[in-house]
Image 1 (cartoon, rainbow, N blue to C red):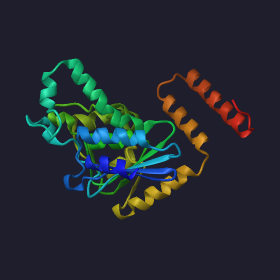
Image 2 (cartoon, rainbow, N blue to C red):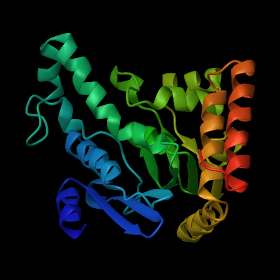
Image 3 (cartoon, one colour):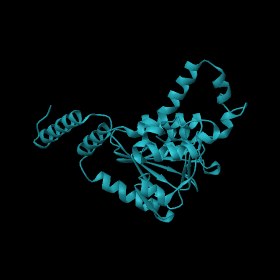
Image 4 (cartoon, helix red, strand yellow):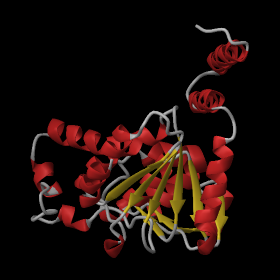
Length: 263
């Protein structure tokens, strides 16, 4: 794992594993953990490398900010070193651009896997892609200095890193629209009140609060937690009859497991 960590850290991501808990750290604090295609590839790889025993993944950012969003160099003619300029991508075939964005989105989708619980520990700025990465996790514990903002529309863009659905599910359509259309900052009190943050604590207590939450998440049997997560995820899209059937099927599996009856 240490050799892989070195490769990931080169692109701004550190993966550490302690038995059933993994920590993914954005580790470019000098640039407020700005994001790039290389960082997204490293996040995808971090998800792929998780050992099977991992139950909880904590996502955090080093320094004063969780992530200040996309590196603006991506929109210059020169682009980010080693990466194509987004302007050049825009001039190419639409299907190629669509495929490229789809690949970027993979860095934001694995956090909702039903075999994991994911917790974002968010302090300081979580802007644009940083906001969307925090939204990708199941839960968010925030420091009282947190500042969320979806700034894409102010740049003539849209949030395209899987954040729109997650944001609407958390705060509702009209509030999500207002946040995105204005690009304004959402601070700690509002984040907790609207459901963006599961918990807000003083910045000095963030690590301890996350540790307490992780311990609580690990307490129940893994199979029951995973089944419950899957049910809650499906509740958003299934009609009531289908959801009720899914609950019955899941509970049947739980009863059989408790009774020691295999498949």
